[in-house]
Length: 304
Image (tube, rainbow, N blue to C red; front, side, top):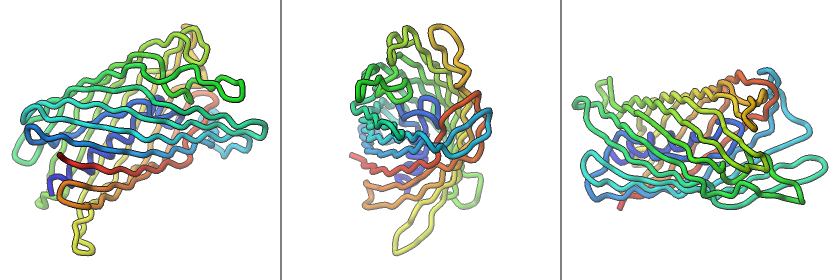
């Protein structure tokens, strides 16, 4: 049962690491979970994410685009290995298919994204609450100059960012209720992005730093002779403006709020499947930006 509780929070957190939330691909996904594994245990995940980006936000007024559609499909391999009862190491590496389609042309880029590695320390706050502290680094392993039909893809549709970024996080999980299966999860994350030389032919490009607050409630239902997990989360992300050649990009950055429901199905005691989505609730964005209309996620997790 602890495996299932762990799985729900892990997948909800790992869904959310877009470069600028709702306008870009998941270029860095971290394994963030206060539920520490037993020493010597390996947790492996295969996650798919389908992000349809065809809403236009102009000074926070959103409408459906009639001229352009972006879609990002990623398959991400994630692993975490427990060195002890408190310390673990992990990494994440996506393979991405990024598409942009207009009435005139269809552009597509394929390839691996940027590699994220991290170290995490977890411990108990009390009998029913745990916390994790961690630091990660994203290194530029993805292509940054993809072209399609002779046209260079925009920065948010390149497979990599070309920058080395630092990620800091704290996560807390526990039950304030009499039912130990009723879990509250909280995640705070800060991502400091570095400069990229040559991203999408820009001399210097820097994605804005990001701040995230994620809150989720999870529980279980006994259906068809199995405990089916469910969770409802709310993600809030604040992103600073991008910089292009050391000048602020007026059409970047802002505030996102999204609902993230999810269900989890235990295939066996050590294998589980998870299905989730993200529903945009509110945007307060700068200038003109494309934003997510629909986002679906499917994952398989196994313990070894």
